[in-house]
Amino acid sequence: MPGRKQIITAILVCASISVIGAEPAQETLLPLHDGRDAYTPRAAFGKDVFLVTWQSGRTGPGDIRKGLHFIGDIVACRVDKSGKALDAAPTVVCGAADLQEKPQVAFGGNTFLAVWQDARNGKDWDLYAARILPDGKVLDKEGFLVSGGPHNQAKPRVAWDGKSFAVVWQDFRDGKYYSIYTARISTDGKVLDAEGVKVASGGFYHCFEPALAAVGGGRSFVLNLAVGLPVDTYRCPMAQGWFIADGKPDSAPAYALDKKKDSKHGPEDRAQPIALAFGGGAFLSAWKNDASLGRGFGPDGNAALFDDKGARKESLNFSGGQGKTDSKRILDPDIVWDGSAFLLAWYEFVRGKKDDCPMDATFVARVGPDGKTIGAVQKIAGTSANPASAPGVASDGSGLSLIAYERHPETADVPIKVGLRILSTGGK
Image: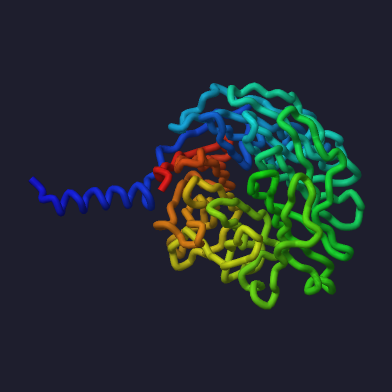
């Protein structure tokens, strides 16, 4: 019979594993919609269920010599806490003409709200949204218009701010430069700021790629990028952070990137997309620092910790690749607060051995509100046969989280599916 010291040691080891090294549950593959490829899954949690949304399809059948035909729709599937799909087939949230892309979803006031960019007008992007109940019923078939002015309204983000849904997006309505706009949406589907409210704009530069995190009490924080013509680049803020209260943004940014201090850490104009979450009195942001051409950018950082006033406190750097030839640069991050720490997910190109072909692999890290990494970075999915990319994360706020991702097939005749794994840290 083991001694008391051995038993205590075993208990402590098990507790440590449950907190910092918990193994995710087995992979679940969600059902396809109409046999189409699944892209960019995003998730939220409410009323004891996860709702996973994604873009279903992109290009339709036909002779491309006669022009491209787009068929991207927005669909959703409910998942229970064990990772089991509750719907035999995805629910179609929007099946309008042309292309619907980049869905985001949040939960609040007993309902989910999905937002996306929509090309149904046949000429540019507009923003649409739809409410989905926890039982899977879509309250706004084909969605309702959030913003549809001239030119593009695109790349939306959504969060529940404690009073209403806050939505932010990049907007090209003036035809010269992109600006950041926001609008509130009530739980009964009313757009409370019909024309949208301008958050950030530049007289000689673009403001684009917003990220959003709710604070509560009607408040949220927006982080955006900025870029101008090459001659103006060094006069641009490159990145800014703004607080919004009850739909009204502050007149001045709480944060502007210090080029002398943070230019090697980022973010910069190519650092899109950005992820942002709030918890434990702090904000954690992360961004892409890989580039399709060249050596990438921001070599010394791909994340940052901000305090609850929006002040940048620390630059951080995350990577899952451990091989000597791995780039240690991340793509498409997403972040959620799991109740006691941030859960950061991303994918990156991992080679392993020198002669291996790079593959997409999805990783997660838990980060405390002090910016310290809790335990080791974990690989969630991704092999040479089945690459895994574009992760989205959600949590019940008590230590149970869902990581969804594009699970790519070994052969081109098999559609891309949404894969997911459940990770439990026991709220510690």
